[in-house]
Length: 435
Image (cartoon, rainbow, N blue to C red; front, side):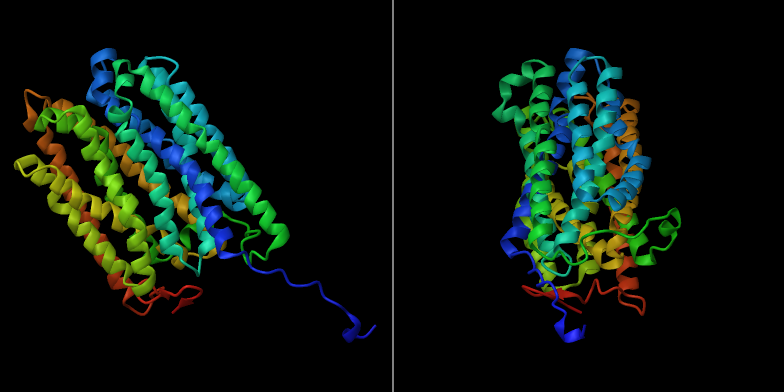
């Protein structure tokens, strides 16, 4: 038979743009529920202290124990994602999130609540890695930073809802258990989101060409040592930046109430300003970075914004909305640039491992600083009668901002040299990336 008589199967078209965005929105619902459950503890801190006798160290433990297993689990989760694919992985980790949220509300004893938070943490961070990998798979070479920004807007709506729960669900805070029951309801999104994503991606595989988004290469432990210098600078920035944000939020509402005389409702709103800014600004920053590049330079600027805000809150009576707004800009800018940057530095087949390793190291910082700040507040007797007891912790957060700025500077130096990956130069049009 001659070659001319051989007929090839018609080539499948690429997924329509609207289909890609539908995938992103539905998979983001999983992280919406995830973020709500995580942030449900912060507005409840003084209630746990009053009704269950928890200390600040106990409250810090409830968030720290979320992070502790992820020192190992997210790396394992990254390997799992690269081996079984994002569909199965998001479903597996979403179920763990729901189970952990349900166990947390079963009993008011610290051991049971901590166990629930631990199980939730086993699924939550790996779920984030799986969703991040899925988005990178569907949007790499397209509107990647903007896509991450939209994803973070949807997911941080979960944080915003949780931190403002004392306003829209004020009656629930009469008992410590009721707000946690609401969080169990929100955790159902951790399962429904992956189900809908599974349906969309399975349908797309039959109808469309997904390029390189199918199987992945075999992942081995030695791959961890093959990631370049730029990747490790991004990881170092990640651990310092997030260690200055999330452990602060653990105690933020309590700090605003006791050190500044705010109501719980206003304290919850102030803490949620980070989320509100991120919901609005993160997609805009992502769109801007896609258009002009300069990713490392933007990360330097975002890190610089963190340095003064904690000391302003500790030493001045500047209206709290001002430093929280500045922190909100930083909280919008850094994630919009940092997470999609990894997709330009690391091969697609290793993205799950790369994001897992990055999140693993991030959780070392989150666990350590939640425990450290809780200890510091107890050691210096931080309370409404001694608001200066919060000052040492605020200094710790400010120093983290300085260290984050240093690593962002090193990243820019690397990415303007001969071994750059294009973080400063890659621009994305409506269809293709332009090196």
